[in-house]
Length: 318
Image (cartoon, helix red, strand yellow):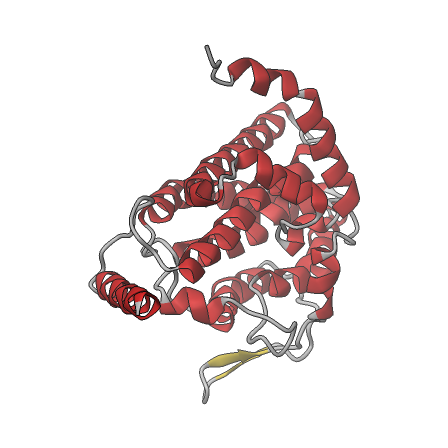
């Protein structure tokens, strides 16, 4: 009887919860929430937060190598912003982890153990200044499309964090576009840097939005995130929005896209394109990308070297 009553009480809580999010209310950290909602948020936001931190590393490599002092200052400021975004998001996750007795330190250990993933694009190399510019222009551009789709997320703390993050990401995309435009208006060698970067990053940009369905990689959380109003669009809708925003811009600069099948179908009003190799998402998830281990090792060293700071700032028990 008690089990039955508990199940009925849980169902009533769930019904009330769904009614709240459908009415546009925000769920807060201390509110009751179903476990799959909490679990989905933890996975989504922790990956987002870690990706902000790991995503700063490809550009960090270009701080000492940027061609002018102003470019060094610009990319250094961007790296600082990305680290701040990561810290903000991990604090959001920390509140969600309280029922499990876990903290941000546990998230870092999950990263080092391979249990916490970060976006596929940040496993890639940034070999040239063209790559550094393209990360800001197209990778951050793709991130803005994905993140603005969640500005109205039903989880209040994430929604509020995203409003700040997206505002700053717009500047990051403009910073990257400025680098690309300077190269596009430069010498033939400089123009070639941009074309090489487009060729190198294009497939990774398509993979960034995730598979159209679980059929491609075996699992997908997009249905859950849409059902709980964490976001509103599917992975494919976001990818289509990316095409609509950037394909004409790339072509207008005189560059080509490494996909001879890419075209806009007026009848279906969708972009037709060559499917990326979805198996590469699993390769990145196993931390087997071109720079996966280098960047993880850098984070491990930094985390260990700064241990004394965390200990000095930790509350003292008297």
